[in-house]
Amino acid sequence: MNIKLFIKILAPFLVVLYTCFEVYFNNVGEVVVTDILQIILVLILIVLFMIIIFMIILKNIYKSVFIVTMVTLVSLNFKSIIDVLQPLLSNFYYWHFILLFIYLICLLTYIFRTYQFKEIGNINSILSIVFAFFILSSTIIAFPKIIDLNKKLKNLNTIDIAVETKISDVSEKPNFYYIIFDEYGGYENLKYFFNYDNHDFYNKVKDLGFNVSYSSNNRAIHTVKVVPDLVNLKFIVNDNISVEEAKILLKNPVLVQLFKNSGYKLNKITNDEIGVDSNPEYLLSQDTVLYESVYTVIMKNTFLYPFFMKVPDGYIKNMQNSLRYLYYSVGLEKQGILSIAHFNLPHNPFIFNKNGDINPPYLFYEYNDNNVYLNYLEYCNNIILNFIKLIKDKDPMAVVLIQSDHGARPTLHKHLILSTDAPSKEEIEYMKSVLNILYFKGEKINIEGLSGYDTLKLVVDKILNTNLYEVQVK
Image 1 (tube, one colour):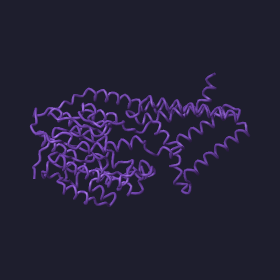
Image 2 (cartoon, rainbow, N blue to C red):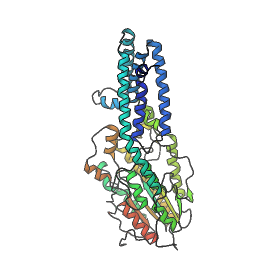
Image 3 (cartoon, helix red, strand yellow):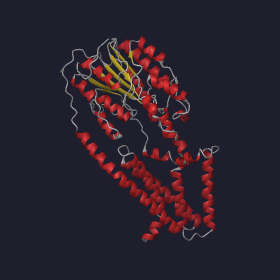
């Protein structure tokens, strides 16, 4: 095969490569290379199959390659195209676009069977060159990012984060439960975005001996920029941190080291990255969380996207098992246990309704109906209250700190998924409003207005006699 012929049939394969490379380059540090290679192989085999089918129909390799190029390009970007056209064609729904797509393929096939189009091979060559240029440009732009990430990962792996503590032993080691509920809106957050008054919940936890803050804020609105700072008790995250870097910072954090050095045992309630390399004495034994794969990310933009707008059964099972283990963790031992959990609720996907029943899949990512999030919040409130009642019954001399990393972000999600306007500066500030409630062996402690970060340092000081943060107990 000479080079000119090769270029004339290369276009659909380059479309596949460009699409997959873009997913990889946009998620460096999160996507495994082998996963990308697997989906590339699958898509190339599909392209080959389509070329054979159209060759049988058209009896011409160049015409077949052109149609397959168009079909591949549209198929892999189907949802993005619909998102652009939907505002212009308000009466069109998913199946209308599917039928239009099929009609256009059939029309193009008929035209190619009827007319010669002698220059179609040259058009294919131009398409090949264009997509080769796109791939090369993306690679050049992403290459420094990949090099920089590798350097950062190497540095993170060699950072010495050993913690010094003023005490070698703690004669009284109250069990400490540190629970993070992801995207639980603080009091001001819920009032601003949903006009929802969460006073009833706050009154109930206060009646159970908790200290509450109505005006706590954290400094960022993304988990990857908040949780590593929290569990390392210092600001170490910058704006450019990747998910992979954040995971490394979570694996043996300063918080766990402090308690371990003071004779505590670690209980991992959720099987995330927090403390995974800290040799936990207790942990939840279950299947790992099924995160979204590269395959799913790519398929969510194809014409098959409605069938991929759901979460794996393993995700739901994992959440249910983790919540059960949260209750089981109360009073594992009389003292000396640090229990840590980070629950991905009431963050999307909105799995449960307020009664704990599983929502229909079409509600998992529903942002136009505020009740979907608020029902999930109510379910979360019930979990917290049930947990607190167990603490009061089985471990009343414990310390319990329940926080969120950031508040609800409805306008951000609508912007990312529904292509609405980006959040305003004011909205972003309200997204920083977080849940922050503390039970300290029944003591009254004023935490009003403290950030989640400062409240955690206050608690560590009081348990371990450190001086991370000093506060006047009222």
